[in-house]
Image 1 (cartoon, rainbow, N blue to C red):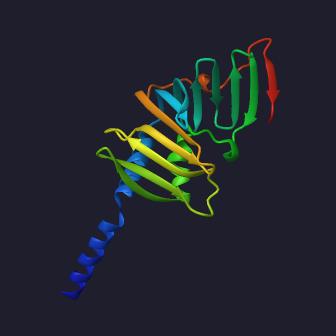
Image 2: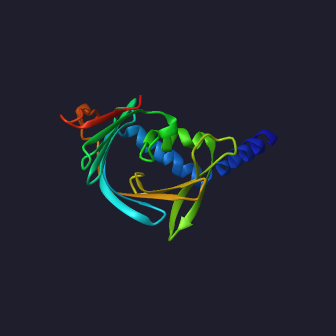
Image 3: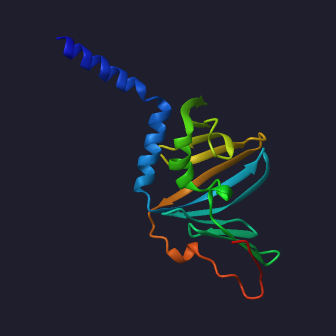
Amino acid sequence: MINIISFLLLFTVGLNYYTVGDKLLRNLQNKFNEVKDLSAEFKQSTSGRAVVSGKFLFKKEDKLRIEFKNSILVSDGSTNWNYNQKENKVIISKNDDSNASPFSLQKVIFDYPKECMVSSEMDDGTEVLILTPNKESSIGYSLIKIWLNNENLIIRIILKDKADNQIQIDFSKYKVNQKIADSKFSFTPPEGSKVIDLR
């Protein structure tokens, strides 16, 4: 009888151990495991100013293509190409943790939570996932908030840096698993463009 009571107590404690934040994170990670590629439209603002919009493409493992009105950022997971169409200039850099894009889903969904306290808060009736970096964390942000839709895809993310600047990105019009070609995630500088290689 004592063993049964002990088991029930342990089971109840186990159920309570997983907070709403843990559940939201688990749902997000499970969804992301099913995603091979995706595209979405986005709007980005910094501290409520300088709103820009564009199109975002992602493909595993951590391949990105971000299309703004006058620039394109492309990454194959190891090399970044940042092309400014107005200046006809391409900056090539190595993709590493020190210059990780806030669009890097792999880092936001899997890497950052390992260095964070996971919790949640309510926002107008919606549970929001909160990631608060530990003191010893190498993450360049002081707070990350993530809103999910009914399909467990990110519809809004807010990242605050240590100077209290805030980046907000809102995603819409998702298309998932379209078999996006790898060629979308590499970039050949246009003829006549100025190339700055920082690798």
